[in-house]
Image: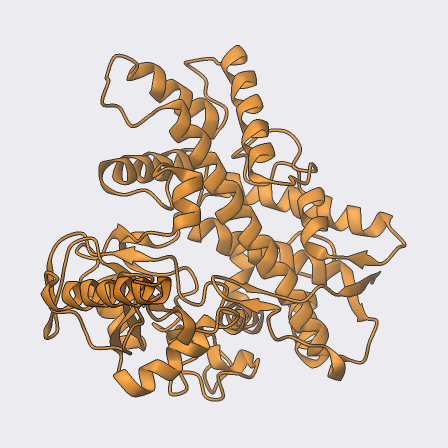
Length: 445
């Protein structure tokens, strides 16, 4: 028997096992494109624009369908009604976190973002409590962000050079914005190992100066919780979980806000008429003699609409972070087994043509009524929705408003190319939408 025959027999056997597993697997999954053995539907997906591939498949298979990434099924939800049903209406049943191999390797099931079960519930509940104690949603944290906004403005004023890559400038400009980690964030981490090493060093510093009766920041609160539960062998509050939770905050918190601001400034360079209207509103409501505050937002409907439109247009997480069925679920006419990965297309919601006419165009009017007042939309899911909604949504909204308004209060944005030639399409639109790098001059006004 030659090698070719052996390979054919082995491949045929693998195909048989794959098809048998699909036919006899527990549950009744939604239909979808026929997967290939071993690789599944991967070859049918454009990895540079996954959301576009999903939209095309939804035209053929409807708002609920199944894709195979390798040999594991993933149920995909497309369109507002299907996404809302999973994230909000049946949020408890779909509150698990889906498997993402890279994240699983890095986080080991710990932290806030990629954990499941009891460790997720306890860590999320504790983190929310600490954030509120630290002032999230209160004037105390607003004052902190106002201070950091002024630091950013001063940093931009001191340089006469071109500001290249606004993302990095943001890291350098506000060294302790959220007070999740003390000290400077000026160090640009090169890789995950260095980040974790940095985090561990800061934790050790806190251990040496810890006052059990006077916690100063997130690390202190977590260390105190660890001390209280040190005799509980089942405790979820461990050193590894602290490191991973802080890692989540750095990557999922600060970086996403930075990318949104960077993308937002690119859009404002592309649309100077929008920038002019925002600055007119800033001059009228805030003026030049004081810093903007959150109370101003209700008097600045156009600016509020612009910030929402930035988030809608850039579609930062096109397919959300994967969810998972927390139990066997009867969903519509299907039976989805516990543990099945769930992908919710946020693109299909944020770029819904009925809710947002001409969704591929940047238009603050998407969030304004006929009288020019700010108009809310249930379709605005930039922070996801339901049980797994972003923990720091309130904080992020505050940051985006105060930082963007502070920048436009003090500077005119000048592009180095004709605005018509500015490319606002994402450099990459796979798991996240990343803008092209660009150059901009900040001219003091």
